[in-house]
Length: 368
Image 1 (cartoon, rainbow, N blue to C red):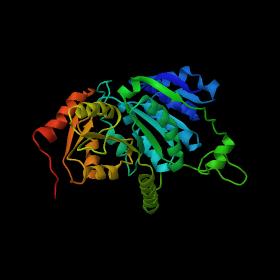
Image 2: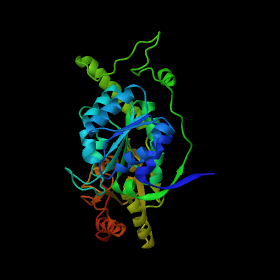
Image 3: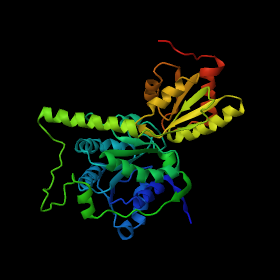
Image 4: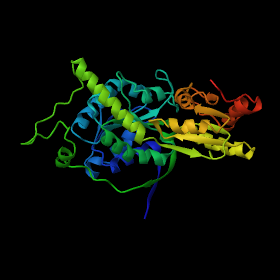
């Protein structure tokens, strides 16, 4: 019998990490993601699975607690919203330098600054381009439903430990707060310390007769060694790009016009496609699920087919840079975004598509 519950997105990912065998959560409350910490506290995880849940004194403290747990080979995570993620960037960069796996959740709100508590997608650059200092990447998963918030908990941990990398689930206030049914799967048991030492020889804990305790640090004053570390990281990012691209297409087989959108914006575009098809417009959607690695090849393939692409974001235009890289000048790319926490309506999204590419016949393939 299926285990199905009605849950908020924030609750779903909290339940997801419990069932994914998470060892520890360290975080600090901030709207609109505070339900994650609240749910984990109410779930009494210490009795249910032995998972530690701790409210730290700040976001800076919480990410460094994650650093410590990850160094011991534990499945650990934190969650926050935009300004809080900004405070964590130094710790995330440290973890990138030491190749420590963890799960990060950003339930994005409008900015810059403290901004608003309403949903936005204006943290794309911060997530996809690394955010902190140095040449590094995160695997970035973009859920478009409450079910995906749940599913990406296990997927995120699996990818984090497969590649020894930090995985960010880049959600927003709408996905975090909305309620939908969620199909839950079985509990994954937490690994014992003995299993961790056996499976992850890089962990700092667990000195044995045949093994010394590791010292984990991202500091190396020798530039030659530091360059080797960076080259190794770039090779890893290349491997991830080759193997972990995820996306979804909707009604693209015969599409003449294409929306590219992720998360909440993709849900809006799904309705816009229906409205467009009712009017006889052949409209489709490409939804990136991984923002890094980005589905450049699929963007390039569809660019050869369609007459125009509209990038829809709840921002001034950030993902559009990656869309244009994929298109490589083959077809015109337009942008439509609402700012400050406003979610666009399907009819206005379709109207922008028509204004840019159809009514004025203002499209065309480029030859240079």
